[in-house]
Image 1 (cartoon, rainbow, N blue to C red):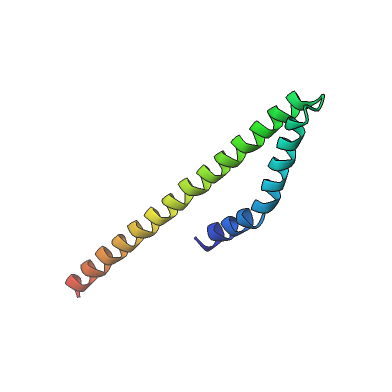
Image 2 (image 1 turned 120 degrees about the horizontal axis):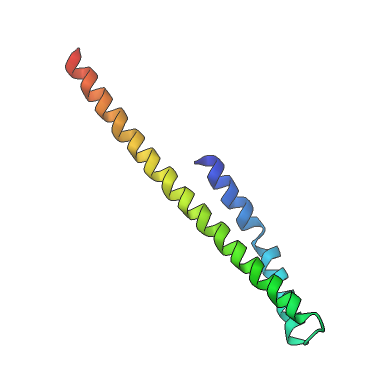
Length: 86
């Protein structure tokens, strides 16, 4: 779980750069640059991939939390069984 939290810290540390990039793309679009269609497509692709990345991070975090809880339940069960056998 610590490794996964470290990944989130790296994502958060780059959030400002992501925002700057998106804002630059939007500036190009408002200026109606000749390559605006390409910039629009890349901007949408960037935002979609970031959304997917965040969703994947959240899904993995949920999985790790559930796995930890299941591991704790199994350990408690195992301990209770060993106490009965002693």
